[in-house]
Length: 362
Image (cartoon, rainbow, N blue to C red; front, side, top):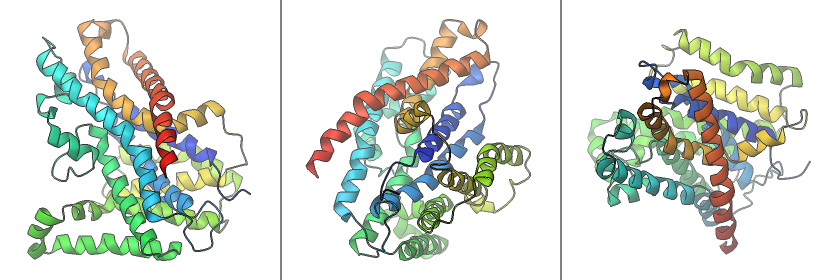
């Protein structure tokens, strides 16, 4: 086996995760107040578990694990910036432009565009906060960017672990979980809350239960390098069922009371963990469709681009009266296809060329 290679099933799962989020954000309320399925947010949990797996996979160079990092902390963090920030900065700038159009150029904006692109988003400081992931006390300009703030916090901690040479994955896991627990302790004490609010607002994110999902991904990396993988039959069964079973349990409120504030990692993260474990266990055992792998490669672009078109598509359907001509399922198909197409174009024409150019410098 190669030391470091693309895990194609992970790419497929990335596309599945992006698809869930895209569908969850469809503005279908234009069809007599219909509501999108919020459980599509489960795609975020899949992304976080995948990130928890992939980051040590990158840092240790795949399966060639010997307890030593194969990359420097600065180089690692710069590569994460190159991977994430350029397209996000461009997408966020487009959001600001859209806010200008809706506020000053569009005579009769519909509710979707008014909600997604208010004039308050024409704000340079907010833009800088958004693209540097320092919007501690407000959401990012591009709504889906909240997940990237968590991602970058995880990258920052991992860079720190590389810098102090923790090396062994077991130490990294313990250190990361310790940080999460200590952050929760600090937040629970009223005497430190003012200090956190003023000087260390990132602790609010560090204490978030969803951060545990990155630790779940790191555990999967340990299972992977130990060859503790599931058999083909079990893996296929899990991949077929983990999303439907999750949906049935949550939709029927069978598991919704489990875990309190920690419900999301305990239930959503649990199912995401097994889905990713099944995917990596099947690597090399089933042939990955090239087109789906490509969409997985483009999943980050799809994730960002869909947020730019969802409100505009609803707006166009309303003002052109296409709602009366195309049913809700047709709307879903058109919206999803456009999201994938735009994301694929952005991946080929923007994301990849920029990353390829910038990576020459380090």
